[in-house]
Length: 115
Image (tube, rainbow, N blue to C red; front, top):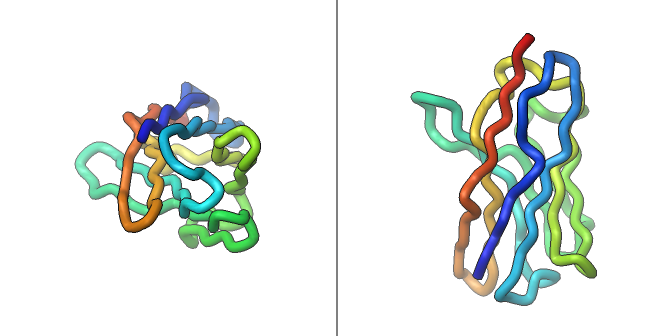
């Protein structure tokens, strides 16, 4: 199993970023996918999740209305569109898969929101 995140970077408050996570090594369309983040000195937290078919999504309260999780099962890729970014969104963002009770994590991508 391999998960490779991309799309992080430095953005000003109010800006947007789209994170991507390319997956391989398992049946992607059958996996629950999610994005998590970890800020310095804080625990890793769930940001958003999406079911295998893409019909069920869940979000952390503080990102509802600003972030959108989606997936393209033909490309084995899950996305996180982040709009109206705030300084408190600064963190390393990780992609996670759960397939047949096996859990895998990507290496993370840094998102920094600062003026």
